[in-house]
Length: 400
Ligand SMILES: Cc1ncc(COP(=O)(O)O)c(C=O)c1O
Image (tube, rainbow, N blue to C red; front, side):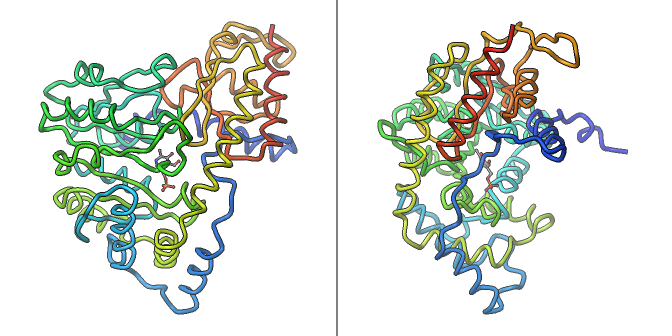
């Protein structure tokens, strides 16, 4: 029998869509997939070569739980170079992806019943990680009008004596919102009044920020709070290395020690070969980051232009990441043909189901705690974006 906690975990709207898409593909349906949150680029050659060399040179054994000294030093150099953050080696953790690292970081600081503040729309796994350890979620709802960002007064109003953790994600998955230095500095002013609150800054999309916005991270903006900020990042999105599974973090030694202690009993070290490849990524040429960002920007603008011609959808211009979050309130209450009858679209989940039947995979807003929206990943070619959006336009027109 499952534990009470496991049995009570909400089922993921993302997984539901994903499973139906697998089923439809197996039946021979041709789908355009806007659901996957990963770059469509290949891992750069010099990184693959480092991985292949690692195998032939026999780097195939267990490493330290928190990673090799070489990788931790590459992470330290990265934090200095990009974020002006200085860490000693024992303040760095590397892990098999940022996802398990985030979950372990949450586990390391939360007791059941502790409150966690997360601005929503939020990445489904951020919400799930809190639920997994019995944390009590306090969502701060944000919307298109405020660029999907939580303000300092909103943060202040949400804090209670039981608040233990704030989880920030900028650029955001799923909205692409990017907090400016000034906005982070305002949030830091609130945090200074609440010394018991610790913060996780999820910076996975750091290198996908578009002109007009610039990346900043809380630990850089408020160095006086560094004893309670864990800055999490990874190679997945930046270097198109989602399958290599390497994430990393820098923060106070007490928190890093706690994470190390848990990982030593759960994950152990991450893949030795991937660690060498990630070291090559962090220490190698960085020009590709800006080049790829330009491609994402072109795709964003292309998709926004096409979406502007679909009157039933409203969409904000994201400043970063590779997602769009169209608002679909106009389509709620409309009717579609289904199984020889008529069915009403009542939620973004119904709409995502309908789109799936029309050959397009999107993730319903319910997966990010926000309705009526859906998320589209545009980490795909302009040709596929055009074809998919044409299908979405036709599907919207076909609703009664
Ligand atoms: C905001 C955010 N954080 C973390 C991750 C996890 O990254 P990794 O591939 O390193 O586990 C993702 C992946 O989708 C993400 O969107």
